[in-house]
Image (tube, rainbow, N blue to C red; front, side, top):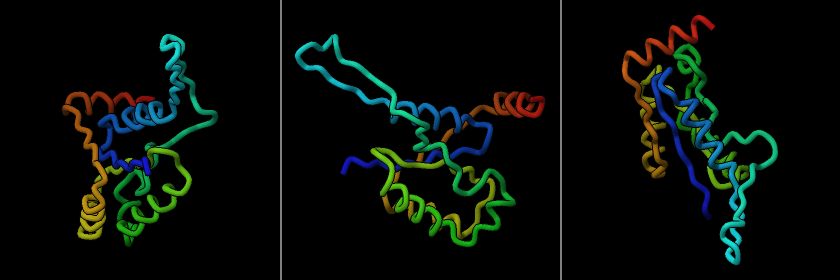
Length: 137
């Protein structure tokens, strides 16, 4: 089974959407090797929107996250559900704007499953500029 799982974690305005879009684009790219004529190797994009990592299963804010009673169950169900449908890569964005023992249990489950967590950071000046830019839009 070549299926891979990933979690992209960031504190918001840290580029998680751009990272997820890049991963989605790479996951959507199909290479067609032509070993007889390597210069003829082609690439193509799969049809339709492909979102392997650009989902936020806990919502985008602390008020939504606070209402989720069992985040571990939500993570397990997410991966079980999408492991059936998605091709090689499945994941989601996790913005730990709210954290308690239940979310710690979910993170421990992710670690126990050996699912890679890509933690996105950004320097404070970039974050402040991004917040201002998005507030003005």
